[in-house]
Image (tube, rainbow, N blue to C red; front, side):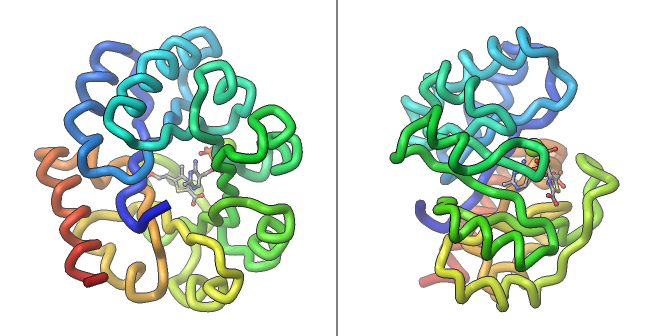
Length: 205
Ligand SMILES: Cc1ncc(COP(=O)(O)OP(=O)(O)O)c(N)n1
Ligand SMILES: Cc1nc(C(=O)O)sc1CCOP(=O)(O)O
Ligand SMILES: [Mg+2]
């Protein structure tokens, strides 16, 4: 997993529109997570089926939010687990040892230690800024990234991140920036995604 933009899909009902929004952004993403909190299971399955080959063709690991079984069904590269989404071991039992399993740690260093002990592939912290995507998200501070760096896992920062507020998170040690609105709600999402990519190049020579 290289440092970079970890793009997460918005809640989009229309499959073709979702595909057309995601496809031009893939050249700028290190990972793509399929997340749709509004869709029913059938729509989620159909959308994941549509996105998986796009990511494969672009060489971008495809991560499914919440659901290891769906990740398995679409041959995704991995799954992202929050506090209500089961254990790393349960996900690995479905996906196998080589899958990417990421864990939400919110503002909780102990939870990150536990995720590291359980062999997670990355730990995610946030929300660092107010998020329209998840308005009630718990808040985290950049100092947490400094403390969690000792765990030696790739660190993802999430929550209200835009090109304009992201730099302090990279300076605090974030390896990946997970973003929904900061790209998909930008006036030009391709420009925003390219600017995120450039931010990584300029902050890590
Ligand atoms: C990269 C990344 N970090 C955090 C989350 C949030 O996961 P969770 O707390 O399970 O909340 P939902 O996304 O399921 O609403 C994430 N999805 N991705
Ligand atoms: C899905 C999610 N999880 C968060 C957490 O803090 O765990 S914040 C968040 C929303 C990310 O979307 P945006 O980039 O639009 O703020
Ligand atoms: Mg979840």
